[in-house]
Length: 106
Image (tube, rainbow, N blue to C red; front, side, top):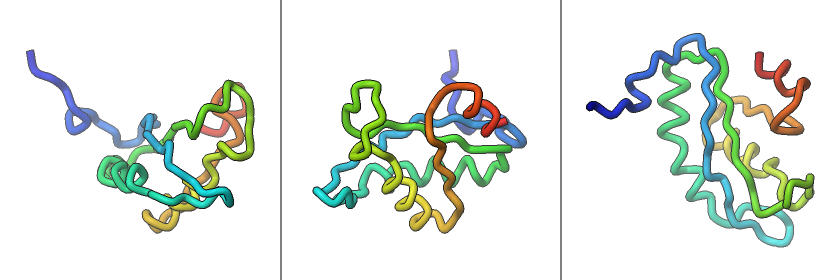
């Protein structure tokens, strides 16, 4: 039995969801102090973008917010760092589930 990989998938024109490990360390000012985990995701992100998906949706978590919206665990600094590293627009949505989010990704 052969193991399928990302390279076996036809991504053109499709919504692609990737769960990333963007749980990066930050200082008290919420500045990222080590972007290694973000950089580690770049080859996969660039590969997928090169396959012309309809949308690439990245999801992650930061810290342990216990199911609540906690400002210090916002992924905004990660989105900004991704913009810088990719040189591409990176939109950040306000939540991860629900009808408004479904409409955003359709």
